[in-house]
Amino acid sequence: MLVYFRLFRNVGNVPLSAANQKRRLQNVTRHVSWVCLVSSHSQTSQLLLSQRCGVEVGKMLRAMGKMVFGGFENPKFTAQESKGEDYEVRTYHPTQWISTTVSGIEQDEALSTGFKRLFRYIQGNNEKQVKVDMTAPVTCLINPGEGPSCESSFTVSFYLPEEHHAEPPKPTIPEIFVENRKEFTVFVRTFGGFANSQNTRDELLKLIESLKRDGMSFKAAPYYRVGYDSPFKLVNRRNEVWLVREEGQE
Image: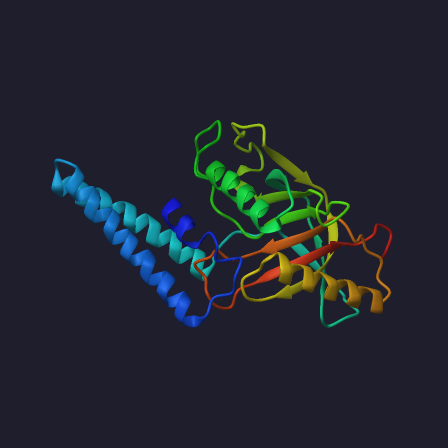
């Protein structure tokens, strides 16, 4: 999967045209074929390696299919009544997440660093050496610095599937930790396309404006940047910004 991550790692920073999206998919296909060709010529047993290559490509294509068409396990929530049509109110049930915190100035770079750490964890880089299914959404809790040139704190999190809640695989590095989230309520604004720091900020300001209009009490910081899709999904993408509701508000 690292092949695909490298090919698509910058895709979230700039929205792609239809032509560029098509070229990226063609590049993935050519890269897979190239890996198979090189592998088959670098080993002694051609037949065995062809079979192995076929298995690996099959795994990658199945993973790509899941990433493109969805099917991820999601945390459970209860939808609440909303005063506005341009945002939702959700109460998330108590959940477990695997998380890592990155400090930095560039939001997109910090999110990428955190994502890669957690992806290695779910690929088996944990004490049990077990693979954990990818889930959605990926959340990034952003605690902004005091100024534009100050470091912010970014906590990137993957939702842990329910099958691992009783005994989550322990991380092997101190930068990763298991996070137990209590029930909490968030105001949610949804937007499409490829999310980046700029359009996330724009959508956040729109959400703040809507909540002030409706007299809602919320915490302006920290806030969540939330994504549901992998870079392989090129259309009908879903991104969100969350603001936590102040306790005591009904």
